[in-house]
Image (tube, rainbow, N blue to C red):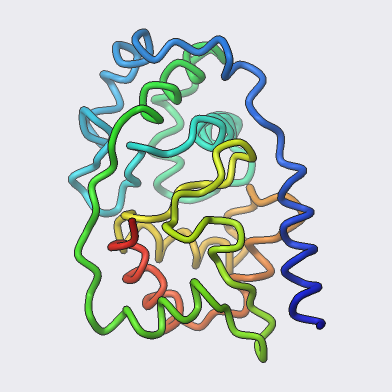
Length: 208
């Protein structure tokens, strides 16, 4: 019962995340042009070739917007990747960010081949969590196929590069990344070991 209550509270808190106010007016066609400078790191269609950079293809627009604003402001994402990206987004307007997010949301994400050694533990954590450790099932917020929940701004995690996912989970665990409302990701990640993080990242890389 306690574990179920944690999962319910997690979902309830995350449901408070705001949907993008500009999403309805976003122009994906204009976003393609505006995203040209992003292609050097994230690829022309949002599928980055370098595994340290996130895939943006198929990511929901609200989530992309929220993260770009966090990087632009310097609040919540104090890490080398964000510092590298900040000069690229500092002059973007809210409309620019919305258009770019709309473009990436319409692209198709590629899927990696999950390392066999990661599948058993990674799937167990993703689909069932760990009741004894108080870790809720990841799919309760990110969906059974890792597609996220676009209407709530929950991010797509399926098909993401392993090094990027590992880095972000550790950043939440270490409190370096604080873009999660009510510290939800930080509270979950704090209970994950390095081995569990690696397994989750590996499993997610092939999830679709």
